[in-house]
Amino acid sequence: MTTITQNPGNGDINTEKSFDVEQQREGALVAGLPKSLGAGSALALGAFGTTLTTLSLSLMEWRGVTTNNVFVGNFFFIAAFGLVVTAQWELSIGNGFAYTVFSAFGLFYAGYGALLTPAFGVAQAYGGDSTAEYNNAVGFFMILWTVFVFTFLIASLPSNIAYILVFLFVDLGFLTVAASYFAMADGHAASAEALKKSGGVFCFLAGLVGWYIVFHLLLKDSLLEIPLGDTSRIFGKKKTH
Image (cartoon, rainbow, N blue to C red; front, side):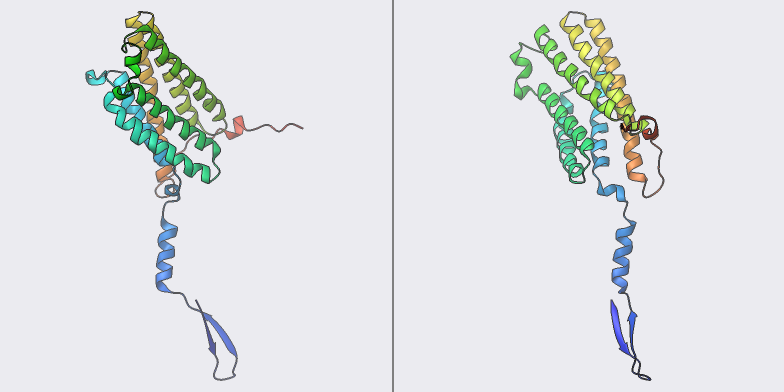
């Protein structure tokens, strides 16, 4: 705020700047907020990590858990809703890659959750989840998502090591889980179980790296910046003349 005063001695007009104390305080509070909280990446990656790590524990059959239906809440409401909504924030700031990745994983979790939800009747349409046709169909579902995630892996090469590891582990996890469904369809139950547990290990590792990135995003503007391992100099875009 600017105050205009007149010098009584010589009649000159002086301008003096005075600042509202409340405005100063508000400005300091706004400036002190962590900037990373303005982006949706932390929420999306937290939803991704929460859903994937819990699913991986079931795939590895920790504490005897083999049924995934309890995670439907994660699939639909945490992952699907959280990732798809957050993706719109990324699109609004022009981050097309994050928008595509978050939307894709959100929709994947919604689709996978639908497979596990009895109300949709997917398994019943094949005569149960133990039939060869059902396992082959889910194997196709997983193998095509493996291809999709592989494109994310290639596109992430110029970013950083953390993102590369997330996509690499997810891709290996999807690939081995797809193989487990095909093995089950062919009647190789022991191989199917081993492949499923291997897929759980890869998904668990992907979830851990996802949590690492969440800590990076939440702490970088407040406490410390955790390195992600920049790879842009190695895989940077080459200009052709």
